[in-house]
Image (cartoon, rainbow, N blue to C red; front, side, top):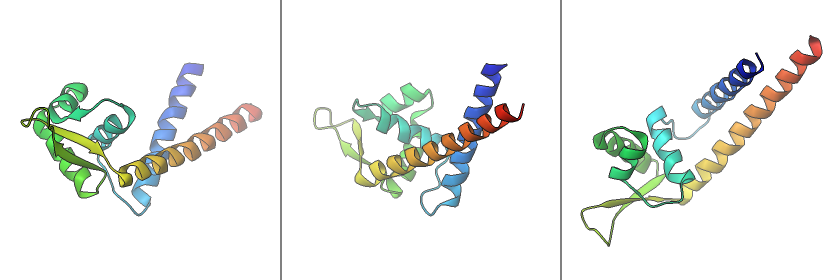
Length: 125
């Protein structure tokens, strides 16, 4: 039962985070775009379209569309790989780093709210 409660708490944090992202003034990312963004920012290795497609187990065109949108918001940029001119590297940006900081803050607030709710429910039982 405790595992179910923990899972429900995580789902609540996810919901509150997504709602906060939708309500705020800024990029409104799809789940795929957010997945690509987080993969690029949380994994230190160099990223390519081919590598992201393999990591996320989606097609290269799907990654390209997500990167197009992320590039529009200046959350990533693409650069030709000097070591292999056929390959394109995905790079982080200052705006992307700021977005990640904001996302972490939103998630932290959502998580803190869920911990308070869980504590209140336990105290009431």
